[in-house]
Image (cartoon, rainbow, N blue to C red; front, side):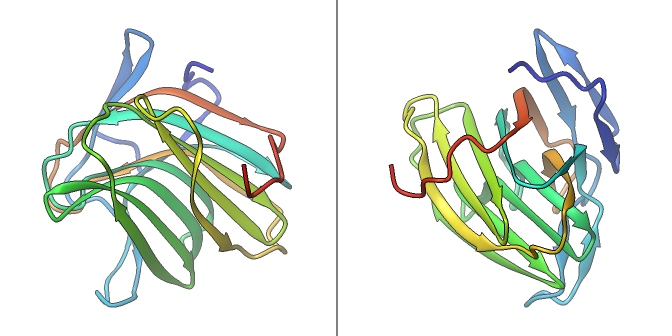
Length: 194
């Protein structure tokens, strides 16, 4: 469904955001990121995150486009309990190309990424939370079938999470992203395989 920022709350509001032609267009602040410790040693909780609260199991989806230019420019979807327990996924710009990226943080962050084809503009991400797991899928405007990106463990004792679009630019300010759709509701499917 079309994104509607009414009823959503910013964590670290961006310096610029507003509705244009039915899309939420945003620009990032300087050196924004979410990361906890692993490999790099730093702890960052400054990324932009527009969210609403959700209890129990759910499926969330977001569709977006971005102007990826600098290392680690990123946009997508986040689920979050606090600064030490969260997951973000979507597109991240690394090694000169767009990659599908997932970071799962349970005290410490991990990162998985794979390179994407260059033949698309818009990306859609779907995250389904089921008990102790989060199931991450993606599709593009040129590849309409949902594809699996990751199945990850997430603490089952955490019932209430914040869920919504996120974006960051760890190396600069001014990364532009436009979110066109966001939905959060009951689990769409519990099937892992098509």
